Length: 362
Image 1 (cartoon, rainbow, N blue to C red):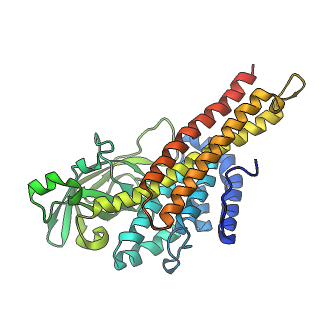
Image 2: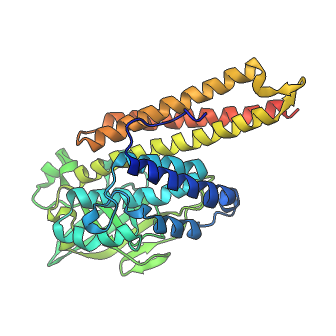
Image 3: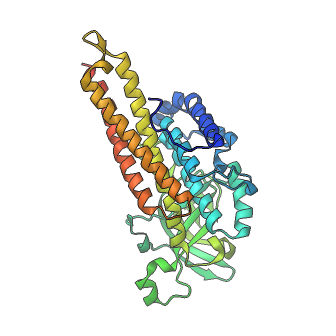
């Protein structure tokens, strides 16, 4: 098992970071994850621990107070965190999508203002693209921004904001038809979208004039992390809070950020699958039938070998997608494939671990 899901070519710094995160997960997350999940309780103590470790600044450049690490390092850390409790990885994912978008597309003033506070975890990021009834058709969004002097006025309803309540900075994608005729906007809707950097107070209700976070959306799983709506009704945002300072670039900026997010989702699947395999191995060594541990029965060995193969394959695809993004290339294809495969194999590994318990408990 020590050979499983290992990553070749890591630096000493990367190995030290991963070792620190792994110890934190074993000591601070795994012992309390089940209780917090059942209570749907926000893991404030765990979040504070991540701040102390510097995890909120992991991918932020050193000049802004971060660690300046790669997407690969971040993805491997997410894999370790999800191994303990997947919800915690959700808390940092949208934060890093926003930090990445600022790093890649923000103006110098925006970087200098936001990134140092994001590196410390004082400013927490959320990512807002979806809308009710929209699905994956991002070009069909209806939320809109209209120029009014030195401000823009935003109206519309957004959906599925991870960290919508606890965040203090939201990257919001809306339609802004400046410089486009109605016919042009209809023909190429992705060219008339803009990302706004919206600052707000944490919590629920009206968190700033014109901006309401109604409350947490109840979910069957993925507890602890808050998922919310966002309602804009005459929300005024200064023009200098357009990401990159230029309207019409929002779709490209968001899609760039989504590539980071998809690697994160793949890493989550890898982490959960690895934990399921670890628990399966432990149980197979402890449970005895016919005078020996069930791990010595060939049928169980087949099941464990299948789980291990899927853990290894998903990890390899996730690492490949992260390294391609780090190289400066597009990784939309690789990230999408890694997200799909890791999610599927995660489900299958968890199901297989459950089967080991259910079939052999009788």
